[in-house]
Structures are given as structure tokens and as C-alpha cells.
Image (cartoon, rainbow, N blue to C red; front, side, top):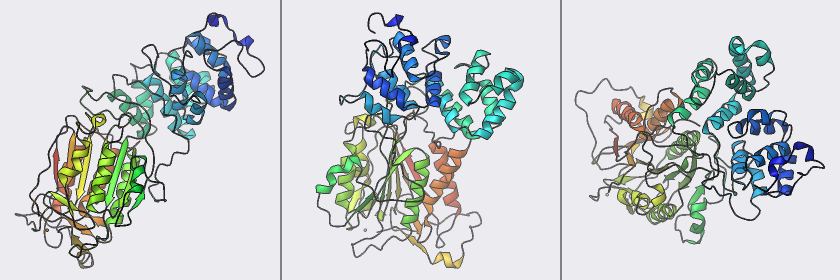
Amino acid sequence: MIAGSQSVDTDTVSGGTLGVEPVMDRLKLSRIDEELESSEVAALCFLCRDVVNRKRLEGVGDAKQLFLRLEEKGLLDNSFFLSQLLSTIRRTDLLNLLETDNSQPEETDASPALSAYRVMLYKIYEDMTQENLEKMKFLLSSKLGRRQTEASNTALDLFAEMEKTGLLSDTNLHELLRVLRELDQQLVLTVQRHMDEAPRQQMRPAPPHVSMDDPRVSSTSQPAQPLPPFLSIVETQPSSEGESTSPDADSDQNTPSAFDTADDYALTHYPRGYCIVISNEKFTAPDLKNRGGTREDEKTLQAVFTRLGFTVYIMRNLTAKNILYNLRTLGKSNFMNHDALVVCVLSHGEKGCVFGTDGRQVLLRSLTEPFTSHVAPTLAGKPKLFFIQACQGSGYQGGARPPPPMPIPSSVLDMLEDDAGPLPNETVPWDADFLLGMATVPEYKSFRHTSTGSIYIQELCRQLTRSAESPEKEDILTVLTRVNREVGKGQYLKYKQMPEPKYTLTKRLVLKFV
């Protein structure tokens, strides 16, 4: 902080600029002030309540005044703290004003981080409807007083009043949970996630390339987009298939420790990471039929994993060579700002392999190898999920004293197919934090409906949705156990199908909608 900055008063601010020589560029701060709305300034003040005395924040009417308060505390010695603030209120467009020197704001040992507790409260404020706000004011009126609740125009105002009366703090969330349970279960989950992720993780600024025009995928459409960043060089590679790629979004902020000792994997970024869907529908190999129904699997996976917070990319009709090339290129990416990786492969297969559209084999080992810790060190300690919809043999599986079969209309039976094809004897080399969800156990076929999608993928997505919407904290293995049970109940062309998860996960993975 510059000498004498402690004595700066708001009365020295005039003419749209700040009054003394800055630690940060005053012109930049003034331009940020001009862009911020009054509601955003109020939100920034709320987020700063743990680092600036509450009374010093009273009466702050614009961002210039807030900047002076932050400067008094040395919080503008560099742009790190201000970048956190702007990122939290989703004004990533203004981050560009701080980063015109092409360098990202740097965190130092002396740089305070935004309170994860306040960020959690801000998310509740963002997600709260006006109707729920009025209900919340009513529920709190007996404890806060009628005058205080009526004067609260936003959820942040209510939170501030609750803090004044001791009803709310980082270590006292009981009253907040009680009220939110009467309003919206999703708001309750926001608080529970915060409690589950203790000890607090630090907030980090969004990278400068992130813009407000977030091209996250819609669950109902797949617009044509440029190639994903990790495949930017694939355009120069020869391809015999005319592959098409339908990407959806870029990654974002925040890096958890790869060696977190908590029982659950940390999921603190948005997006959580990439979800890659390799979907082979049309085959040039004469002995492999086209896979009708795979587009339905694509749509379902895209919808579910987008809601789970992943950036979804769909790659269609890849040869074996291009499957390997794309995954190896992806494995060279920097995953520091990712929490997890999901890869779904929808194709024909045999034991230990899947097929490219040219009929050549891709060993399961080759799918996972680019993401092992020695090849992709920034994925170390993070869950890597692979879901394989493909046959793993040419046999048909029967059942011993099965429960009454699920009735399937005769018109549907004609539309069931298997994803089989010729047979190496390869196994997947396991490394820590992998999960491989197979549509079937080795030696047997898996089934796909040519209109509604594969039995396994559709059931997987149903159970992921059920778990993500449940207030229970179910981990992925619980979900896959239900998938096994539900798929195993059915009969498909008079045969059975039993999925098989294999894993070396070292923590629980709990996936919730974001």
C-alpha cells in the first residue's frame, strides 16, 4: 500500500477518478466503477465483510468508495483480491481491465482469499427467487424483527441482519438451513456442499480468457462450434472418416489439492472438467453394422453431464487412429483447473477393446493410459471416469431363477441389437482414481435399442439424475450398484445383461447438479 493511503477519505473522490496516486491503475478502477450497478456494489460490500470492518462499509454508495476501503487494508496492492470479487459476481468481462498487461493476477502468501462462506451465501442470493425471498422474510420476521425484515430488499440484506443478531455465521448455519428447507431443496444443497467441503478452499480468479459469453451446451441442442481447445491441432491431421465434433464450453477457475485428505473428492470448480463422448454410429468396416440409437445416448449424456457441471464435447464416427489421437492430445492438457474427467465411448466392441469406425481395435488400456498420473500429472488425485457402451464378447448371458422379466412389447424386441464384433485378450492397467463402467461383463454382449438408446447408458443417466436430485449424499459406486440391479432385472431378446464397474477410486465421488 502506498504511503499515506490510510488517511484517504471518500471526500477526496471527485470527477469520476480516485483522489490519490494509486497502487493499482486508478483509470482502470474508475472504469470498473462506471460499469458496476448499485446492486453489484452492494454484493461486493457483502463479500468484503470478513476483511473490512462492517462500519467502514456502511454508507458505501459506489465502487470508488469501496476501493478506498480495500486500499486501506492493503487489498489493492495487486489485483488478486479484486479479481476474486469480480469473478464471484460473474463480471468476468471486467477482469480484462485488470489484465491488459497480459498477465494473470497472482496470489501471494499475503493475499487474502474471499471467504468460501460468503461466496456460498452469494450463490444462494443469486439462486433465490423473489417469491422465496418473501417467504424467507416472513419466516425470519419473528427472530429479526418486522422492521429489519421489511427493510431487507435482497437475501444478502437478510443474511447481514441474521449475522448482526447471531443467527448466522460460518460456524452456525443451522437457522439458515432450517429456513431454506421450507423454500427450495437446491438452496439447501448449496449449504450442505459448503459444509461438506470444509476446511475452506480458497477462491481463485477466473482466467482472463473466460468471457460472459459462456458457450455451455444446451441440453436440447448441439450447435456447430469450433474444435475444443485441446484438439486445436487435430485440424492438421489426416482423417479418412469425416469426423465431426460438437463442443460446448471452456474450463474455469480454482485448483484443489491433489492430496486432499477428506473422504470425498473435491468438486470446487465450474465447470468440473471435460466430459468427452466418443460416439460411433456409421462404420466403414463391412462386418460391423451401423449403431442406430447412439444419438439418443449422446443427447442423454450431454444433458445429464452438463447439469452435473461438466463441459461436454461430442466426437462422432472416429477411426481407431483418431480415437487414440484425440485422447492422447487431450491427455497433454493442463487439468489444474479441473476436478474430474469423464470419457464415454459408444461403439462396437469385444473383450478388452472397442472398435473404431474402420473396424480396428482400440484396447481399453489405450483409452485410460493417456490419463494416468505419470502421463497427465495434473489429473493426479482426481477421479477419471470411463463409461464404455460396447459388447465385451460374443456370448449371450442367461440367468438362474431370474425375477419375472420386465415385459417388452414385440415391436420393441425387433429394435434391440447388440454391440459385438472379432477378440483380443487384453486387460486394463489400473492406476489410482480410475473408474471403468462397462455395459457388460467380459465374454458377453450388451444391448442397444435402435430408437431409444442403449440399455446401459440410459439407465446410467437415469440413476445419475436420481442421485443428483436426491438430498442424500450418494457416491458413484452406490449409483452404479443401482444401475447393475436395474439393468439386471430386464430381459433383452430373451437374454440378460449385467454391467460391470471396475475402480481404483481412493475417495467417495458424489455428483450433484450445479
